[in-house]
Length: 330
Image (cartoon, rainbow, N blue to C red; front, top):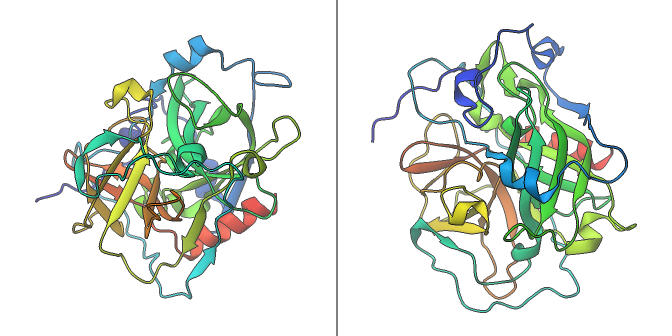
């Protein structure tokens, strides 16, 4: 399949819309590459009254950057060999057993009906983009030192003009508009400073971490558990499982998935899977070696980009590990 070069980040942020020209993004001014933190601005006071059911229904899907036009992306090489680092999962006390096996070769998305820990840790990310419009993406809870880190995608946290998102909340186990475990308000977000550099989008670095506040005195991991997370994965693996909340799957009301064998990656990415999940699935977790009995595994990527047929995952290499460690310590 012929793929077109990636265009600049402004064009690619389809879910956030077009923006007027502004000053050079703050991330481009960062001296050297490293984790970049930003406190999440909110327009609501204590609690999360901003995200009413009506606002959640009106939020527009955050589209993954799409193969829509020609252009040039400055290359990055984030795949230098490093020792693999595994952060173990944290099962919840009441993790549901599987109801039925999932289909292991599903290029066309299906609704997740298999239960397991993933049915609790996966969820929706809601936010207000730099253009002032509300959006929705996907995310997943992973084990962390303080039990408060949610993994999502970088382009949900900062737009093509270098403007940070605000009003960010994470709703684990979202289904049909319900927030069964509450709405976890984000207080700090983290990206890799080189993600948007010299006016170009760097697809392999399109990951982000949210540090979320407790709900009723409990962290998000204490509430729903946490998946494992793997950095510097040594192998691509023979199969993949990608989950998220795409708008073209039950209107974003249910957790959807694609699965199957890896295909040849592009755009400098490391992971690729034939999948039809569209806008709203950005930030969804990507697994390998997923346990079919418990629904527990190690997240090795996040849904960061897609073209008309294929989804691509950013690489959790040393940059992602440093970003995660920064989020853990926040």
